[in-house]
Length: 297
Image (cartoon, rainbow, N blue to C red; front, top):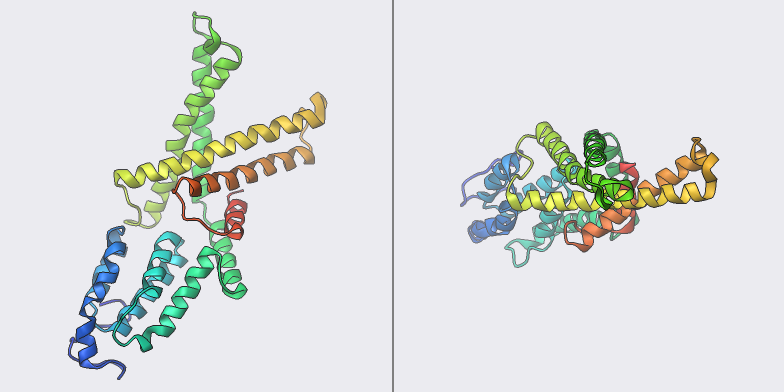
């Protein structure tokens, strides 16, 4: 059974809360887990399969709530939200009066993730998320790897284009630089994605899904975010050069750093919104988006 909630025979009562007839009626509780099981892998799937064998409604939902809270603590907000939603949305459950407090708590946790509900739980969620994300080196290492691949590949592609004996728009000047940047970007995206996902898998074996649909989904999201960063970064640099002039553009100034950070922050926010619009990211409230963007800086 679920860790911390040892299972017993289906015909026995536990804690005096549910009768034997109610337990028998709860034998289809595992149906609630079917959509979640279809998306789970590794240790999470093993936990869900163990929980699916639980026949006591109260212990089942206690285990489900505990699992959701652990997924939230691990940073897997998508799965945590699905688990909370499944628990909070369960209807016509025998012994429902005993699980209402659990459903209320699950709904409160779900509202905090989605940016709804009371300010207290929302603030606690944001504070925990900021502390966890700020101390996670995965994003920094992934960005570093992607940036290194972009810089090296762009230099290599550009040198080959400029050395080409054929002279046209794409082998000189702006055209060559644009083509080199585009080619390097196509290599940067998979490098960024593979580094981040590989590190997460290394830290939590079995936590990542590697099927084709999931990989494409994640690659598309990474492409939108990095593309938005490139766009806003270029716009911020151009704006700074216009304001500071040639002399200011050659010297590192606080204003230059401000433009750079503003461009990055805007790009991250834009990338997240583009992912949401494309259905690649669960829509969240503005506070969560801003927090995620600040952490990525």
